[in-house]
Image 1 (cartoon, rainbow, N blue to C red):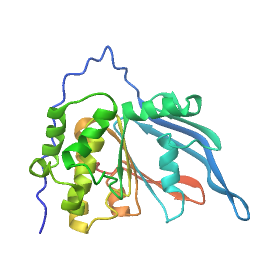
Image 2 (cartoon, one colour):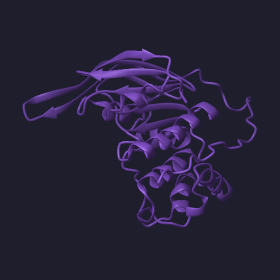
Image 3 (cartoon, one colour):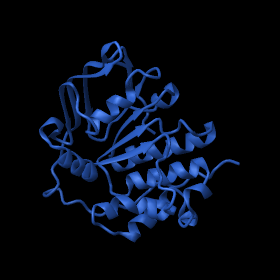
Image 4 (cartoon, rainbow, N blue to C red):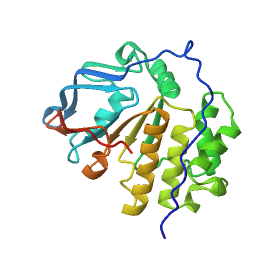
Length: 251
């Protein structure tokens, strides 16, 4: 049975532009390489990657399995550091921050959506969504209720992940990613575990977030049709990142 498409419109509080600086570039990547030790010596995963992502933009990275897409996404988010080159995230050079400072930057600026949902099974949908706020020392039940309603799951707020369908779990994951109003959203194969109809509805929520709220979206996917909905599409091949298409609708 087809899932109803929720109305993904959230009322944001007024923004004090005098206290929140405008950053024209959300992500800046220059000459990034990543190597790892293998049984036959060093393996070059990424080689001289350059990428600039403007605030509010949507970018898709495609490539074959094992091409390094997830590795690159982890580097962009500061989950790991490159072997060579530099990455700036929300105006901060990641290699100039220690691990604690990178974690604080992610908590403040970044949301994540993963293929495998990564919901905590012992927590309800409501509790999973509230987790980023609680970890940041900010309890906001009204905000949690707001984002659950935005993804059409207010009536499932007390259900545990095992009681939800795959599409519902991914919508909870999206609400969790958005609850802290991230400036940048990273999505790793966000529809990879979903059937086609459900995947289309989840991807629609992603693009509504990008378009309506000015959130920057960086997504890795094997689905070229999904990738083409982004403003820019890049292919990762043999460690190199090449732009292949521009002009996606982003919606």
